[in-house]
Length: 314
Ligand code: SF4
Ligand code: ZN
Ligand code: ZN
Image (cartoon, rainbow, N blue to C red):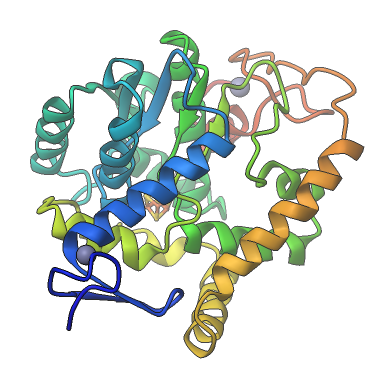
């Protein structure tokens, strides 16, 4: 089987959404090119500094590897958080991540829940269980991770924070927000970043048009060793996402390219929606930690969780 692109090398991958058979080199080049096209659309290519939120998983390695091909690595800075999840946050993968990033010329900043917030995720969860709070590990995890990433972005004066979300994640999020009718979240998902508050560093997702299977194959073809163990709290993820994921996989299997079409149609609609949406006033600051919070709140969700878990005095 000869590669449909270069017509020279042996094809090793079938790309169902294009119907092409590609060799290793042409597949890697195809992914890189598509990331570059998306990054140019998101207008991040000429920015001064981009903070890459990296977990050490395959997507974050693909993010760093692809972006550094067309953005000077001195303008990229990576940020890794140790959430403090026993058996999951493994130092050997962070070490590997650090080595890969060093080879690419990207500096890595390491941070952790325990150092920055005072408690590991495991400790937060144990405390919340003692108080009989019905809050999932993912609620604690997502909120505090967002806070630390934003703070790091501000600290290094980054113009953007880039995350490794792939096409599967993005299509699932679109469908979930449609089901929930969450307009603001929906608008923020478009291909052009939307500034929702001057207190947040703008978030971008350069891999949003790359299928998850493609980031996995890319990482394997490049020989990256990455964290493959699942988080022990994975079963606490909202079940709606699992159901939507299953549904979208079935549709994609029947008609390859479905996820890409969902995203492309959505981008076209979100452009129109953004014109209608105006940020009328700044977000209020939490009276405890000073972070921006949702209109109508005086204490942010993160501080509220710590108070309700008995980890912060009221
Ligand atoms: Fe955090 Fe939940 Fe993901 Fe585990 S599964 S890393 S707790 S968001
Ligand atoms: Zn080829
Ligand atoms: Zn707060």
